[in-house]
Image (cartoon, rainbow, N blue to C red):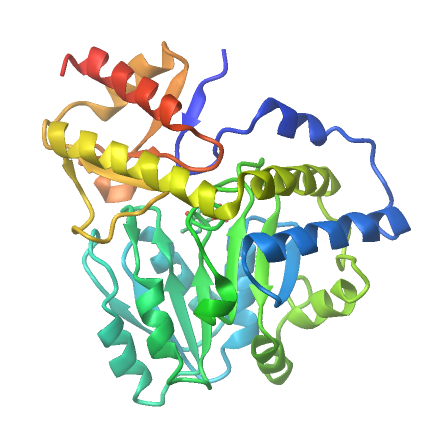
Length: 354
Ligand SMILES: *Cc1c(COP(=O)(O)O)cnc(C)c1O
């Protein structure tokens, strides 16, 4: 029996979307493919409020995090660590032989914008790595506030990991002025895993031309050569492209602003429930709209709760890494509805006899 996924990726995929994955295949150098590709790009631009360049990568989101480190760091990067995924990005930079220093805050806290401003003012850095929504802690960093500050640093390439927020949270990219941002399809876009989406400005593209040793698979130069022809450099996950094209129609039909409102409603509902029955893990004012990390103040066994939820065909996430059993996470992203969330919380109340 399928368990409904209330976990922060992979998320629940609708039946009609799943069916699109079995569309008969087409050649990736055919005119039909070019049409499919340009259809996806045009729709993504609407969903993300951008005129910048879109790239579609057959990899998970981590691939595009690696792309950022290989293409945009020439001198030295500034990392911003507030949990497991932001920590991973700094590690990726090092693994690619790049120089990086990081601002690091306690898990559950956000990255203070003034700390970034102070560090960038030293002039030591040409790239900033910033995690919009830290999935391990449920913290949403204040990207709108940072957008104002980044205007003062036109020589810094601002890279954002929006893997667990893009497509759920509202990201008006051109207004924000982000130079590079990436996601993978298995989170708020509610598709299966296997494809990643990146958006980059001309400034980021120009920067990458200057940076040596970009490799091949994740070289912006390779992507650019093919994206101009509405193609991908190598054979992409064509099933995902059919499903993405279809899902983007659904997202545009709902309207991105409405989709965001739905996410906010679900988040507010889960937060109110969590405050009443447990507590919230993130510091107040910085809670994610796509997932809620709940502090396990009742010391319940999260593993047991999940076992019982499995009997009701549902699953939630335990805490990440060291936060296992100390916290648990409920994702409310993608195509989930408030009714789904109410049913889940009702089940949890019955199981725990709250
Ligand atoms: C899931 C996630 C990743 C990793 O994405 P993959 O597609 O598994 O590579 C990176 N960053 C954040 C914030 C995530 O939530």
